[in-house]
Length: 290
Length: 305
Image (tube, rainbow over all chains, first blue to last red; front, side, top):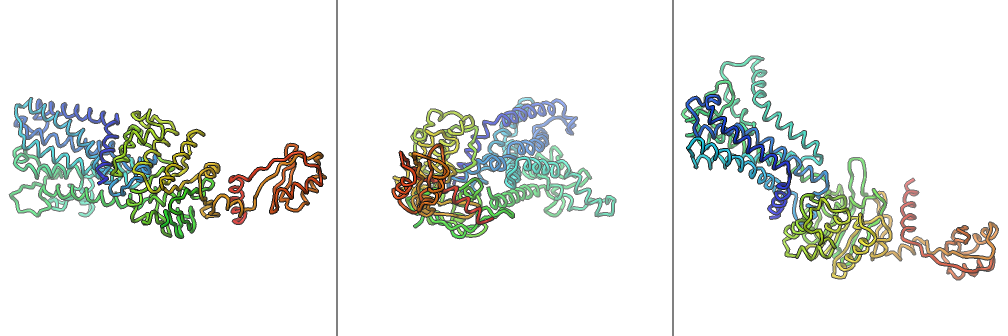
């Protein structure tokens, strides 16, 4: 089980990075500011009925959905490419371990680093919110934090996987940012663009079902849906719409829709990203010469 | 069972052939020197022993296990000082050694290991602030973790001062006496000459010689060089000495006659020179491994050309 030793060493190494502490500070600050803004001005954030703790959780998802991808890139892009570029990978692979164990150790180590920073930020932010609102839903917080940590682990795996494909940190940076731009920034537009082209350069009146799961391919959209799926009652009370398609696809649990249009698809997609990043990252890493 | 066995090992990087059809056997318990100029294929070969890179053709067997499919088993019994490595800047020396101990699943004392390589004073400083020589010592300490059966050292004296290089040789000898096979590469001949039982010379990805140092000397017929002070030394004397039997080459060097002895005894040559011009004094210099090395690697190039 050398992966655990690798993960521990990696964590030890990374927690001494100033960049990480800057990141934690930024997240704690953002978390507190956004909580305060939500509690004071709930109308501005789509909760005209007044701030609720459930509403705060769903409001926080937006922040996490942006913060986790960026933080993962900062924390993970050098994880394997950097070791290869510098040559410390030789020190690591001189020891009785395998490339698979090193890969897993890196994912776990970096995920732990991210989870630590994120955990601190969430606890401070939600704790602050609970004090301001005088309300706390422990179970919901627990489910939300666990889902968020799982999302973080998936993102760590994606960026470590990207880092595993190359021995150059500049290429790793390009690939990771490219991933972010395509799957996080542009993904809302791409499926609609495809639909537009497929339909002969016009948008149909009814958005087909397949658009919904395609939208969820973006990991942060899948994360949002996953939280909706895990906290269905809370999602209903705050009116969280997991489709995020923005084109008026109304999905409720009552309708007899195919599985892929239910928010559970988010969980499936996050699992898919985990598998794809591990398989692609590991197989390229395993083939490489150092 | 041989400690290391390479059979028909070839490694190509695109069009470049780094190692070409290498066959090499290192016996258990010996100190084996791997010599070659920069870019000869030394590090590529070592990297294949450790599965950092995979051979294009051929098989690499280390301690009876396939280096590619059973790398973890190989490395659990091997201590490695790699080439072009980098330490973890933010971890201390002690943390490095502790990491190696935990990875090997042994319970060595990090303090004792750091003491042995003389970096114990800096044990709690971050390795990023270490000098090149200290890093080299630190990684040697990591290599010694778990009393390995095989030590693979790629250019171990890099960054060490003469004292450090001597200490490195002492550790190599001590480990060898304990029964450890030592395989190390170098482009510094005297390092190899000082400790090795056998050497292999590699050039342009080909093995050009494998032998004991004495064996190499005999095989190359470089033999010895005589420096002779004679009563009169001029071109005419030099010409006559060149014509003598057993004289490979002769030249005037710093007021002395420099004569390469070839095939016959030194005494016979001295005696013959004495008849040409009276011998006043002489000294004998045994050819160094460096001469052998230059000769081998240059010959290789001539053949290729």
